[in-house]
Length: 177
Image 1 (spheres, rainbow, N blue to C red):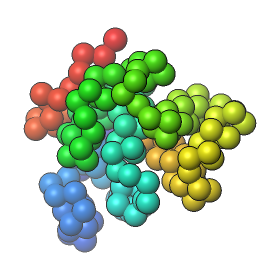
Image 2 (spheres, helix red, strand yellow; image 1 turned 180 degrees about the vertical axis):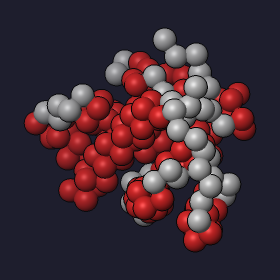
Image 3 (spheres, rainbow, N blue to C red; image 1 turned 90 degrees about the vertical axis):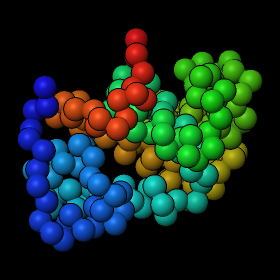
């Protein structure tokens, strides 16, 4: 059961959320219990999602991998739809849990997925960093690390608040081990 009620938004925040995301999803409605932090979260999420230079499909793979590792059905359900919209192949989605041995992923994707796992584990080694830097600029490294870190935080907040899955994505929720 969700631990905080779904909040109503003041008109300015409601308008901004609708501009960015359409109808606010349950995550935003739960966060809405603290309007100032919801507004800051919204702008940060928007920057990661829309002001990034790395391919959206790559970042969606990272987000889906985060959801798998931390067992976040909510994060998986919402981002599966986004990954498909970003043209992530069904073969990559199916192989994601075994990305290290799958032939579906190229070297850049492998580097980003290794970074994702390292950020989640709070252990970005020099070797992981070096491999990421073989494929990405310093700015892209920061962008990818922020993506991994932000979506690890998203899953932690979803868990802390026990946010209920939105009805329109229930069919996307996996059976996580």
